[in-house]
Length: 279
Image 1 (spheres, helix red, strand yellow):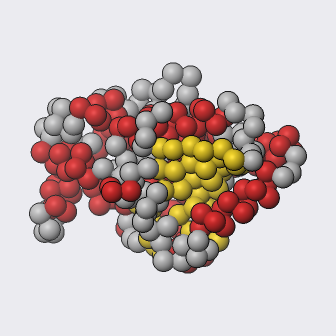
Image 2 (cartoon, one colour; image 1 turned 90 degrees about the vertical axis):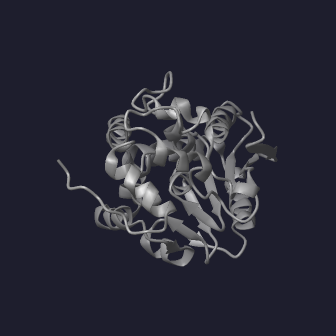
């Protein structure tokens, strides 16, 4: 595992942290890989009874690495490689599934926490934007700071949520709220996130509150806890494999298109975007 994600297990609780605080834990290729690997590692560790997922520093996760993403504004519409070699696997054929999974690598960074047999509690401070929010939505429970900022930010870049977020949003907030948040990309405070259903509750120290809850869960029968998560996931999930594949197909069609490139250029040039009408 790279140093992008750290995992420490103590008395049955796995403390998982995104570890790129100087970049607000923004997602690069190494972070995607480390998150998926951390999920695999924890799933195989029967001593882990509960998981706390958080970010080092001021923010949970600010979304995609902006330096890599800005390069997409200059990428040719046929894909090219100007988006950075480190994202090559994500920017080639995103409809390709990881071996033995229903996800691509980016989706697995979020889905890993949903599919883990152990309960996962996300502790959100600072920002949870775009892909960062989708990772938090992969957890079973989200404890957020009242002043945290959450956003389904992909519309800013002319894209759609593509890391399992469409399925998670519908489950958590309902179709109308999911559409409003996705269509607008507006920022939501931690307090509003709780009211909407994006988060479970607020706490001044989300990591501490999440750890207390994780230890309470870890004290219960692990067989019963795992059975409960399986049952509750099964009741909520509807053809996730199909949904995740459609996310990838839609993103693949948008990525590098004239309007998507214009959305990115306009943002970084600090001007209103000028979009072409759909064909």
